[in-house]
Image 1 (cartoon, rainbow, N blue to C red):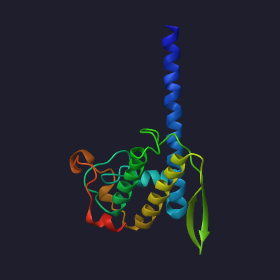
Image 2: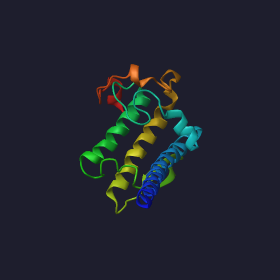
Image 3: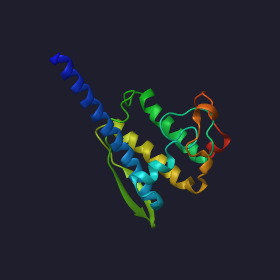
Image 4: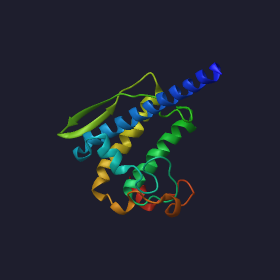
Length: 170
């Protein structure tokens, strides 16, 4: 009985550790967005605004993106998937790598630079997050409330990676 209790505690601690790492990446992405677009200058601002938007923003995604913001999220999903497909990151391990980046201004415009790392997964995850932050901040003015809390079960096809014509220009 003692052994199963210890196993349960280890399982709970492992889950909490992974959850904290996942949260750290979400916070980093939120910080990037807040730097690029001051209206989103909090984890709640960025996360609350884009989570569960369209068919791709938030966890998972399938079907045809609804607009350019949704395309940004689809491209972010594809970026993360490519890192596991090419072996840079382990499947399911994209949340267990912490990365560093710098924020600076160039010609008065906010910029983000991912710091090189001994961990290629962490560096490339940063690049994926930087790209989606730039994309979302670029298209934020096109935000459409009808896609917030979008019913993915009935409105998004289950086929993955359908490409909308307007995504080609991103």
